[in-house]
Image 1: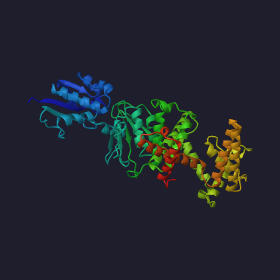
Image 2: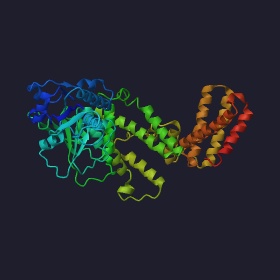
Image 3: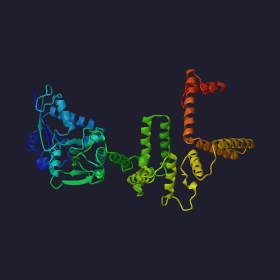
Image 4: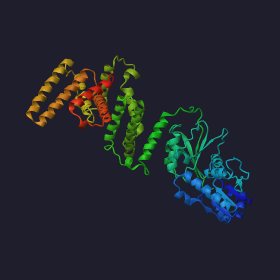
Length: 513
């Protein structure tokens, strides 16, 4: 069988002087010399040596994914080698995180793992020419010994959702191929799961390349905001002594990661929808998400509750990011503000005050709130304390509670029953009068009185109504289900039959609130 040579050679970290002499000698005599990418400073050595080569740079523009790209490169390299001696040259060390090389070796040698044997059928003799890898170059540039080893991570894996779960903060980490700010953001978001936002990492550019080497210490939070990443950029993450063990994530890091994602959504290459949002446009989404949280609670669905709380938090994050862009405030200001408020308004927890009941806590909260400078104007009305954005039932409840605090209230629930009856009679008269505006006013008065009764009975009117809405929905669905089994719809039966179905649906959920 005719043997053909395939040499896979490293170009080193970028310094033309570090390209292996054997790689140059073999390239001079090969039929084909092909580069994974021409965008590497060491290629200058090939040009000086007048070595003719081609590159796969054009494939980067057409491949739909990196997996497809590396597969196509491997296929073409093997095709070249079947037609004559070929040298395939890659940046750094050829066996250090070069996926195209992994595919070539696996294909040529049938997955044997040996790097010097002849494959049983393809007649290709494989040779590896090592060179200094980027990891060694980064360590050399930092002049930092790594006695306990280190972890290597490809930045492109992070945007492909190949998350290296084996990372441990107590060992150093080198992230390579941090070619642009998009990749830098991916690195930052991943590391924030393990490290605090102010942890110092090092951006290393042009390691061991004379005249191009640059080392920038930055906080993790600023990793994607500093410098201009290029194909020779790596990130060195020093070991963090006494780091928490696996599974113990930093809450602050998770929050910073979340806010970084929100910032990216509104950034230059972010999401068109997120970028167009304002304080005003987000208001309806905040209300929707808040009600969906309530709905998940009423449904007793904890998985849904977890999800809906996240959706609500997104609206908070968007508000904070918009505020930061406008210079109004930051997410940190929000966290600081609520922390201080909680301490200030809970003197019975943080200042040794004695408070005996939840009702006393509410009264003390309101008292402290009114005493806070700038909270209300000097001549403020109690009604100023009713938030304008509240839904109608909640607004009515708060109005009534504030009025009750100063003695303007019904003596007991029985008096409210009488008021409801009075309002009902007035509504009947209004209906008989035929004036829709008066009818609407009287319906409002009746609802207001019902809210008052709920308050006197210790019932939250908003939650109670939501519960009744959900109850109606369940029973109505059950009616539809029964009708469907008989190939009928609501319009096919009379009201008496529907009443019987309704009562049956009530019986079916006996014991359900």
